Length: 153
Image 1: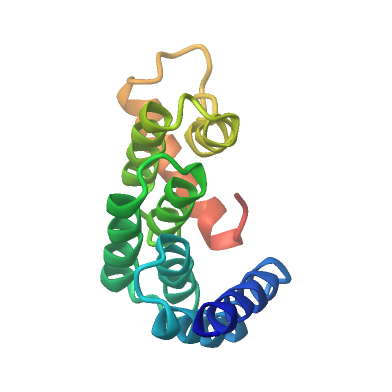
Image 2: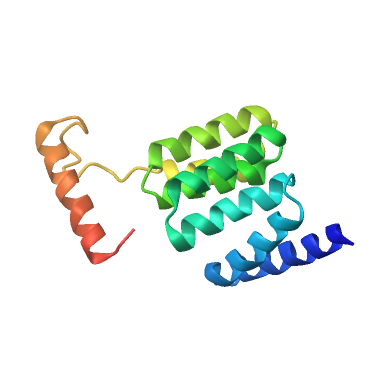
């Protein structure tokens, strides 16, 4: 009976997450983990919800990493960890999580797509100069800050 309750809570939590209500999802996912503490999917999604709602990056990372230690071959667990890193502003670590995931999941297409999305770079500001040129680097930083300020991605 406990497992059914945990699974129902988990399903509700997933639905709330996918509908864009992470705070509501958090409550359901916390209950699912309370009922079934050794389920890697429950732990991973709880970590993701903690990152999205409460910005508790350390705890979110810990839960997602623990889930991966339990089940290394499931791509969704890598996607969740990468999203935790991405929302924390740790882009390089998100990329690394996806690259590691590709090794353990037989190059799963969902991980490849996520890696392409996250690692796409904008062209140099002045295309006639090399990307590493000091002028391009400074202008690139200014562009990045301006786009962040304008909330563009």
